[in-house]
Image (cartoon, rainbow, N blue to C red; front, side):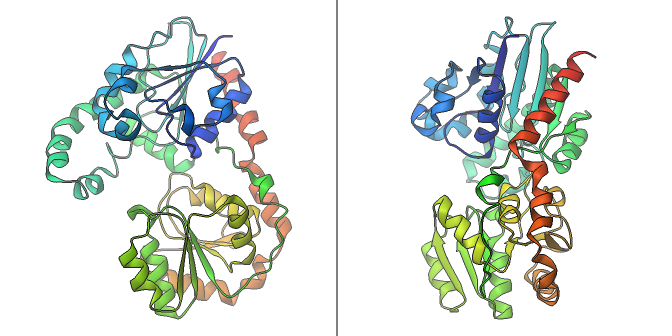
Length: 365
């Protein structure tokens, strides 16, 4: 069986690329097709495969401005010749699923997310863009939405990385899907020894939709200590918030440091909305409870009253109420066995088992 994996772009190593690595372990002879490829930014495993790029790769500053070229990517996908492949796996978060397979091939799309800048986050992207980008978005997005929906017909079967994404696949493409949780390196965190101290933790890139501001303002208003991990904080915000004496910005940290903070934090605060959200799974694998906003992928990754709690509104006051509730029942979250049992469903082995099962079953239909 000849296999092609179509991935939107290869310019960093994040969650989508970790899924790609596991797919490459499943299919060691697979070829990779992508829009933009930076060998220096990805793993040796990815670089060990044949990688074919679209013409987007040769446009000016493509490795940095790849998202600006998104309107050209649907046409670029059509130039990929995949007629010799028996199995095509598209890894969709940016344009990837719109390739044309041969009539006898099986095309499964592993959907990290329908493109959020086309759909549910369109207005947020529009609001945060300059005048020229807003002008272009208003004219290009309608036709890109039509292409996105139409190209879903080239997919034989969808796999979604969470129930939240599965609902959006149903909403935008009117297609069903199987939920296959992405592989998380839980083994790295299961041996962590918990020794909680008197601080909460926020971990993630400091961009708007992560809503670090909710965690920060909730802790300041309630007199609780907060450690903020992750890049992207503005110097002005750091100076302002650290004046409280309650908030500490650490910046980017190593994997070993992350495990250490999970071992010492009272709980991880997760006030944003993620399609899946690997960080809460990593925290739970380390035995660290999670207090999350009740929406998105955390409804799959956090088990209420077992590995964490939810709060109902994206406001500091709602989060404060959840922290009060957590502290009143904190001993309930000290059983490491229940954390370890919960995170097994997010292991690499489980991902491989589920994907192989779906591919074999659906190809026979």
